Length: 261
Image 1 (tube, one colour):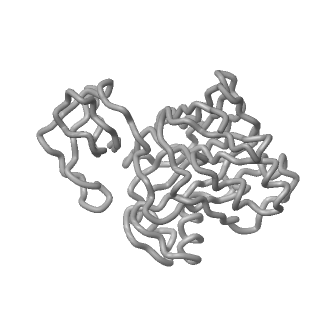
Image 2: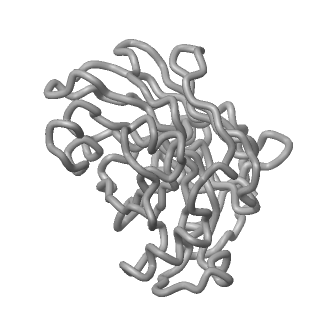
């Protein structure tokens, strides 16, 4: 089931506020009452065509975006580091989240802003110390993320907080797929139509159960929290005035514009 968050057009008669819905196979969205993570998936009678809405980030975390670094061996190598012995955790603020076709803003203080395609886990319930065999119980679904990074600032600071945290530096979408099962699906990133990253989810060093188990041993996760699971090799700069697209088989494609501040 594909869960979308959107604003309807002015003639839809659904009001101006963002709504949640289920994207049906016929191209229509069945409107949901309330936030599906908190209230469950309760369809209303209202329906609207996908091409008559503006898709938003399928969720804005109320708490946090947890990220896993160097989770692909080829990416660890290109960054000049060893494969970590355990998941490497860092955070992005929820204010960095944007949605499909929104603009990634290149900050004035950076000279290199890179793309990083990643599988994103959406947490569906409060959880702590989740056993690996119970991880599926706490996952609401999956989406695509671009872990945008000011690479020069990452190197300058010697840590990742500033480089990862600018507003607009966490595009996610275009929807949450509740029935997705990570396996060998291909993930790619392209800049202005040229593929820069290409790998399979099975190339991850730490799989989803390991990641969720590890993170929840460190911190409590809340409904709507997002975990980014790492990026493969091929990271590189985006282009001001261009477009970046990240895609995962079975989850679709997420495209964003890039503009100077």
